[in-house]
Image 1 (cartoon, helix red, strand yellow):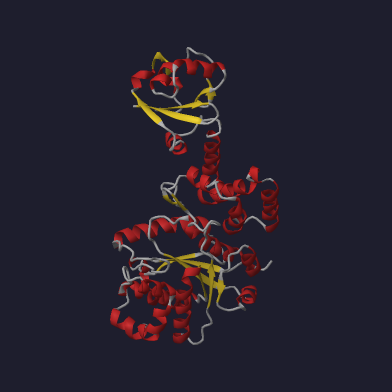
Image 2 (tube, rainbow, N blue to C red; image 1 turned 30 degrees about the horizontal axis):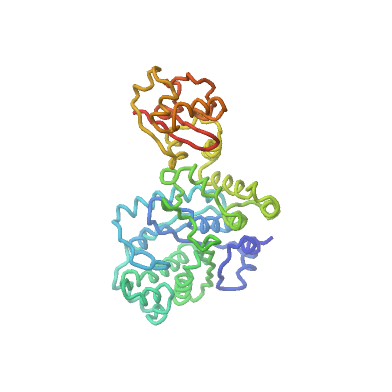
Length: 424
């Protein structure tokens, strides 16, 4: 397949400004860019579609530019927002830029003849003077057209929030980015989410007006949603981040494992480089044996490996198996806390590990069992586990060796009733 056919088959083409772009991509090697506003010190999986788009272009021989919005991030893009963003300080913006740049380097190749480039629009906006900008750039923008943009019109119709002049001016700044990148790198294609269509067209129009010789293009990728209409990448605890400190590899892996059957195949197309034949085989398994969750397992493994690496993937898989009676040895305390975050727990003094106390006495005290008699019956029937190892003796004692990590013992009754004992 050609690059455009590949992107189309994967569902990664939402809108394109010129129907001839697909053919041009086969004839010429273009430089393209996609912008990322540093609203946090980590990107989240909502940004992953745009990153995958750049990676597909680079694999096909084109040169990708990742534009960090060190300046535009100070303003805030109103696209898709129902109210004004909270402005943050330059120091926070710079910290966020650094964090996002580190992550982008995981996905793009910065060596070779079409090496990726990272730029920061703060580098050129810091030298722009307001009056000069209004004279040379602002005069090319029609307020009538700007007001008609969906991102602006929706806010104007909301009398409670409205839109500030600050956010209204955002599209001028983003358009200027396109002009700057055309001048500096002969960049002729901008990609972005489908909510960026108006900004992309504005940049093309500005470049055409000021550089009549330029032929520029735009392509948008879809904003991903779940099949039930809910927001992709959001959980009850918040965003799913690419930073392991903000979203652990285990939680990240679990997000993908829990993908609905109706979404799994499409997400394989969006978020992996697996070939069409392999994804087709997984789609067939979803139809014929959905209980095996083959597509979800492949999705979780591919994306976790790509974002967090092979070692973190192996730990995430092991942690996932722990919930179903798998081996707990070697898992860190943080991992245990993560795995069993929704499991009831009881704090006990470290002195209880002296070896004087029977395990069944502690279980009774903590109300993990209704009585010592029930604990004995569980042991007799093979239904009581300490750190996922079956307890065989009624007189088993609680000792330092009972701990799975330095401070935690994991109790399981039956197949999946867990309780943590935390010793302090």
